[in-house]
Image 1 (cartoon, rainbow, N blue to C red):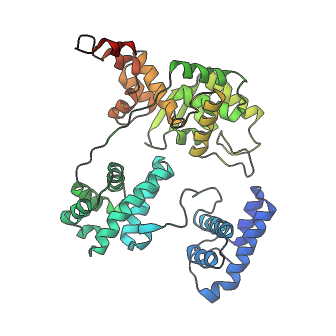
Image 2 (image 1 turned 120 degrees about the horizontal axis):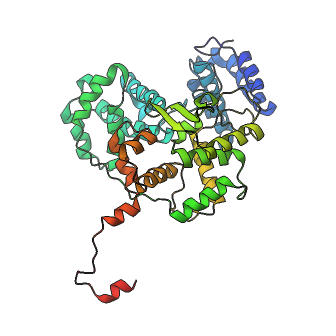
Image 3 (image 1 turned 60 degrees about the horizontal axis):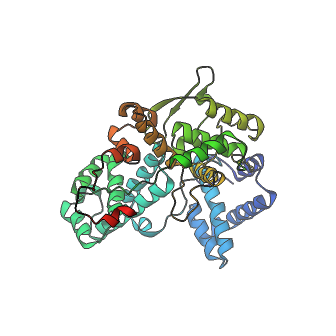
Length: 405
């Protein structure tokens, strides 16, 4: 029996799972669901894995069993759609909330936004937040009688915002959907974008790495102390010395590195633009050590792989986890509320360049920015130069005891 809407068969799925090193116990669970599908498709007349899974989930009250079945049917869905076990992990089978109530055209708009966002390398959480926010607007418009983007009026859009107390981030998330390339709906989306009320994008104060913290990080990246595995040390070196985004680090391939010219050349996930970076000794040595001593034996071109079978390429989330391991090894940023993600390395690189007097165009080029104004957010962490702009208060009528602190 073939998988729904696919030339692949269940037998091929099981064969590929075995090649990728899935456990026998998990494959037994998958085989059990395959037999259920074969025996009950004629009974329930389901025409999608989502519909079949909803039936299976309703047949048990165990949260663990429900979660396991959702995972398995999501596996069926991905294999049917992509003919691969590794592709499509960020495209969930199930959606909840307002999205499920939308008509076909509105769903296609959001689906196209999702595809475009993942092509650009946006994080799954960012994409889900935008889809959720925009689904609320679209469902409200649909409830008011609008079944097509072409029919939506400015009055209807403004009415939604006037009756809803929406946060600034929600408004930004809604706008991001209509700003994206959404195929045949792009023109209508652009028109609706002009209907949105003006958005005030606010930036929070940025936590930055102090000089003591950067010294601690360099120490654990260059030595053997701290208990870092070679993969996490190599990932930390790439983040610290290049400022690459997590998505680009996760997607880094051996073919992206020219060892003779000492260059790293990639196509950025977020912008689609080429980025050329120097391959420093620290980065090159860290990657070489990992590749020759710790990396699993695999023909996959990606440099960084998961340590457990099946040894697939790591995700951007794994890069973030590696960054946290670096902070732990350096014994820094362990207090509640401390920022410890991979992006902090990117801020640090920009601030250190600015502190060294490197011109803005060169900093933007190194970070791979397509918009020069994107650098403003990073340079707000350039504390040394910001202090030079501060106005002293000793000439003001302030009590002397203030200066004792």
